[in-house]
Amino acid sequence: MNATSFSSRMFHQCRAEWRHQYGMVLLWLAVLLMRQWHRAHEARVTFSKLSIAGFDLWLEVGALLVAAALAWRSVSADTPSNTDTFSLTRPVGQAALWCGKLLFLLSSVILPAALVVSRSWQGFGFGAGQWAAMTGTVLLTGGLVCGIAGALTALTSTSRQVFALAVLAVIGAGIEMVMPGRAGDQEVITLEQHHAELCGSFVAAVSALAGLLGAWWLATVPRRRVLAACCMTGTLVAAPLIASAWRTDWITPPVLEYANAPKLGLIVGKADPADKTPGRGLWPTLRITGLGKDEVASIAEFAPIDDKASWPPEGSYSDLKDNDGGYDSWLHHEHTRALFKHYPATTLWRQQIGNNAMYNGRQSLNEVIQGLRLKREGAIKTRWRLRLVVHEMKRVATLPFRQFWTQENEFLIRPGLRLEFNAYAWLREAWEMHGRAHRLHSSVLSADAHRGANVRGRELSDDFFLVLEDLELKENKALSLGLVQREKQWSSYRDRSYQWQTDENQGFEIRMWTPREQEVILKRTRDEWIDAQKASVWHAEERGVVEFELTAAQMAEVLPEPKAGVKKP
Image 1 (cartoon, helix red, strand yellow):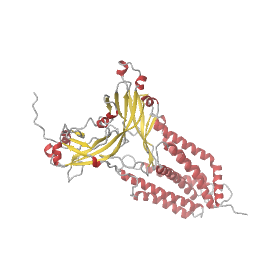
Image 2 (cartoon, rainbow, N blue to C red):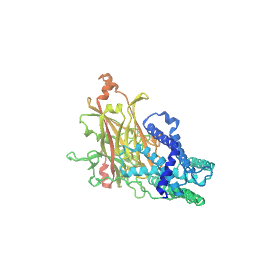
Image 3 (cartoon, rainbow, N blue to C red):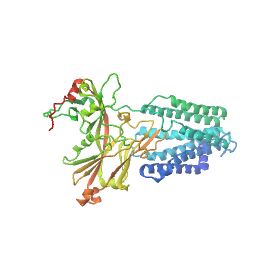
């Protein structure tokens, strides 16, 4: 009689598990699908009643419990130390038994989770690297749940012991979550420190998975329960130590330096009327040359240099001030002007920018030096530094406004970032369009080649214009989307991220009313007003950061001595 091969016995055990556990597998699939539907529903629906009920938390906990229960039911049926149950099938050998159950958990718990979750990754322009990283993190998370459930079940003798350990684990996790310093008053850390912590947790999780599978194998195949318990205990103790001691950061990309910096130049002093290339004016006596056609330079910092103190000093000037209104919008007048060349010269423009409260036009040089508590005599005796952030205005799409009004629209900005618009709806006594900048990528592999410019401790996020073009009246209206800040408008910044995967929905809303003047004077109906317009989405895409130093002599030309004024009558 020929002995049955190891692979045949392993697959036989896997088939037996499927026959006995298919009901739990169907429940697991139902929870997964409900969880994914709920996440998509909450992101798209503006005022979701389900969010009030807290279904998101219940579904997350439910998915975790069902996965752990499925692993417990499978392992407890055949574990050598379990006195409550016995083998589901004829003896197949301990090694084949362990491998068969591992294959069953992989095919019934982990792979279905990866397939269901990956449906939401489509349309984000991912390359092979991001797909592999995101799939790997899902497999790692599922492996940890099944690994710890399998190891605990293999080490315990009765179901009561399993339940007792599970209750202790839940209590410990709850204490960890509510410990002081975990929620709102934790120390502020840099982006690099946060990424180093992510890298450490990932390495610790990989080592923990190996240790848990090893403990489960020791308890099942050679039946070394004491050695298996030591292996599991050592794994659980070592994992947090590895995470806290890890310092290597492979996630943070480098800062983007402006590629055409050698072509840029500063011109100081008043412009010569005969000069055909006077440059773009930052101020009347300070201009920049060499920028691209659609590029806009924003002043990140402008202040004198003190060799004995850090730069920039308090009171330095910036176009990109933090918005206290809860919006992450930083577009200003120069970005609107950059759009003029793309439309007829006779077009009448209006703008509605989300940082009106913080930016009402660039301050004059006199106001700049007053903010630094300087006078001209002191300002022209020292060197100054000018830091600029350059963005290029790029058209994303142009569509009939009717399509924005009645349909949902999605635009891929770059891999990992998608701009999503809901249709207009009558809400709170106005026509409102809600949308979001949807960022989705692996947390352990950066989706961007470079990080955004850091201005005053915050990283500039992406910003957008929606330009409405009235083809009949030759009128354009530029609306900044008004993306919200996470800290100040958390209810509109829906963060659905979980361990090692970023899934953020940075919300925005645009409110408008049918122009009353057109209804009364032109007798335009709402439908006629909508059909007469085109809508274009513009993206301010970062091109990099560049710095200049101005000598004392140059500053004397930037701040010319005021002429004696004539007394007003």
